[in-house]
Amino acid sequence: MSDASMPIGQLARSAGCKVQTIRYYEQVGLLPPPARTAGAQRRYGEAHQQKLRFIRHARELGFPLPAIRELLALSDQQESDCAGADRIARRQLEAVNRRIMMLTSLRAELERMLAHGHGNRIRDCRVIATLADHGLCSHEHHEAAASSRGDGCTARGDDEAMTRR
Image 1 (tube, rainbow, N blue to C red):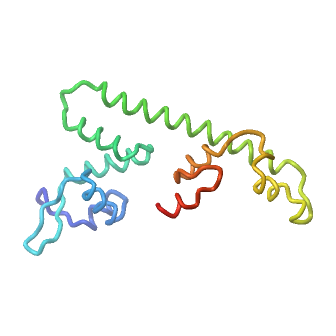
Image 2 (cartoon, rainbow, N blue to C red):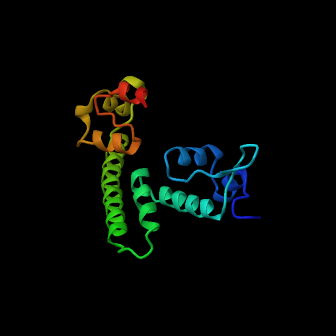
Image 3 (spheres, one colour):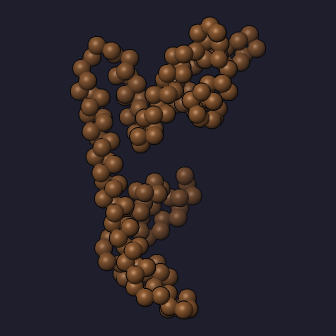
């Protein structure tokens, strides 16, 4: 195979992702446009495969797309200082630590909700009562829930924000 002879399906299989994901990464500029055959079929090479694996691994580690864009730009400057990559990774670690703290808070609240007596009927159910009255919660967790869902909604149930996504 020459450098740019891999069809998109083969690239997707080799990277463990969907064809639509590859097209999306091209659209947002994370992957460079591929060469095309006379019939306009996309053809990818080893460089695309390596970059796609880089992106996929960064996504598995939770890096947001803007950070991946920065990391890709840095990876093209092989002789540059590593401080920029370290700074990006440190930001990601801080974000992960914040999410862990929020999820720990959510877990504690759910455990507390379940631990407080169960009624035989819905009218006596602590889960239903707590969900209906945020005041029954032991601590604030609405920001944690919005973060873990990724929808940006507040505790007041901003359903409009969810439907705009």
